[in-house]
Length: 433
Ligand code: IMP
Image 1: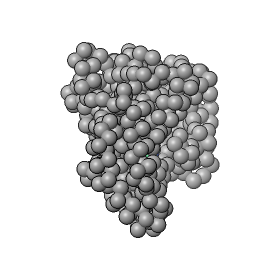
Image 2 (image 1 turned 120 degrees about the vertical axis):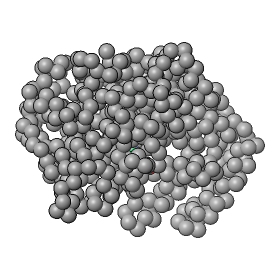
Image 3 (image 1 turned 180 degrees about the vertical axis):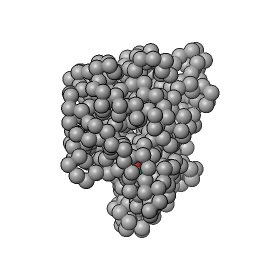
């Protein structure tokens, strides 16, 4: 039986948490497949707002087994704090499972990320300073510590002893930062293993068993396609693969076991951190999008940069993710803007460019070519069907579908669970039927 991938088509923060939460009723397993606590999912349930960084938002549903897959990098301090926060608010985490193959974000990874960003002479990447890049670097360099290693104290000591000296040489020698104490770290890491022993397991076996039993699952990505290590705006990217392809390696599901890819986008663009955002607006409209859209990072609190929807990377994202349908979020934020624009091409050094990707250097010089649409003034928060939407809104949606090359199957008009419309018709999102 198949799985559905939920992935971001832009620069992250598209509202993937809401998508997972919405489709959760129809699935029994939710697997997070990449990233770490750099992500932030805000889910609103009635009066309650939950902010999650690591645990899949499916945890908010009792019937779901939330899984942190092998493609994720796990900071055990964050994981334990998130579990404690959920317990305090009456949400059980007994079903949560963490892949033994997921890599551990160690304190030296966080220290190195922070030191590198601080020392960067070119302004840096603007990372979340959660140690993501250094942890994935050690994974690829085969000197990482995996969650399963936390359960083997002797092995853990050997793994740590082999790397801590080198990390300290870097921290102290290259950056003048404080060294990590091997003994204290070892003690803490053994403690993580003890506290998480019943959670750490072979999640690939779990996932495969669930699929063989005919259960349906969601594979939940973090960040977005433009932050993908291979397909994003390198080097202004994260260190993993948010694209749907990453869902296979990051969760232990084979390509033919996936039958749907729900691509998530916002009705406009945002980006947090450094790197090109060709449609960025530094005027009153940009201010409107950031403030009305409450575009502040869940993880770092940083103000997001905002701009018009950019169809160039979106069309590419639909292709590389093989998005079978789209969830369009935050359409309500555009209410009140007299005119709306969508970028349909760029002008680079006097040339018209309508394909993506472009080298970052060209992207930085790219001037957007816009198509203009009439805006609407009606409050969309209470609208519950497509037919009730103003005709200008429907025109804007139709232009997205046509230019992006995929149908919209879900539209979100506010943060609440019920402020969502499932589009009628033969749409590929089975769980939305
Ligand atoms: P890192 O993932 O912390 O290494 O940061 C690399 C880039 O990805 C930076 O520009 C971050 O701002 C961005 N980033 C990481 N996680 C998220 C996210 O969840 N939403 C949006 N941007 C993110």
